[in-house]
Amino acid sequence: MSKSLSSPASLLSAPAQNAAAGLALRCANLHRHLGQGEGRVHVLRGVSFEARRGHVTAIVGPSGCGKSTLLYLLGLLDQPDDGSIWISDQLMSNSSDLDRTAARCEHIGFVFQFHFLMLEFSALENVMMPMRKLGRLGEAKMVARARSLLADVGLGEKTHRLATQLSGGEQQRVAVARALANQPSIILADEPTGNLDVTNSNLVFDLLTKLAKENGQAVVLVTHNPEIAQRCDEIKPMRDGQFC
Ligand SMILES: Nc1ncnc2c1ncn2[C@@H]1O[C@H](COP(=O)(O)OP(=O)(O)OP(=O)(O)O)[C@@H](O)[C@H]1O
Ligand SMILES: [Mg+2]
Image (cartoon, rainbow, N blue to C red):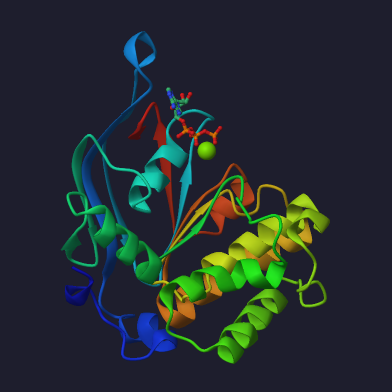
């Protein structure tokens, strides 16, 4: 599968090569039910969406409307009950777990709403984790890249701190750095500035925007912050499992 996706000659230049190529991701008519029996809920009710390279899109909407559920589907972390998802032009919604994992590893950087860092590891090791999984860089290059990403999110002095020794906002910034580790063509970020003060919120948002503009990465972020949403290229309001 992943062979027919844009296979990068060099890991670090992949998004730049594809910058002019248009859509990084799209989905059509996604449906997702969650829960069992009487508690089964029709969470996503026919969602169609496109993420453009070089574009920052904000998904906004009230708590419980399905934003995280949608991001999980787009990030190939969960599967729809109905509908299709394409990464570049490759249909992914029906592919095997192995192919979806490979595509996620290579093309998608995901910032989780609750960050999910490996708490017993340092900030540096957490950021190196996706690079180890992809297996394209040697140890020294992985360390240098992880250091540089942590510096980008304002944590250059705390690279060796264990995740448990970082504040919530610091952990969130490590999670942002980790999502950028493999220079993914698609960055999906679930409230990446949710725990941050204004300065760090701007730092993270400016970094994501810069990556979109300079490298042609597609950025899709969920936010409850109207100021952040206003600064995106596009705002997609969501309600009751659909875009309005
Ligand atoms: N395992 C589950 N079983 C049943 N319902 C679920 C399950 N997980 C989530 N839901 C429901 O799905 C809906 C959408 O949840 P989701 O986490 O996508 O919301 P959200 O828009 O991201 O909200 P928030 O802004 O609070 O993060 C909610 O109503 C939630 O209660
Ligand atoms: Mg959510």
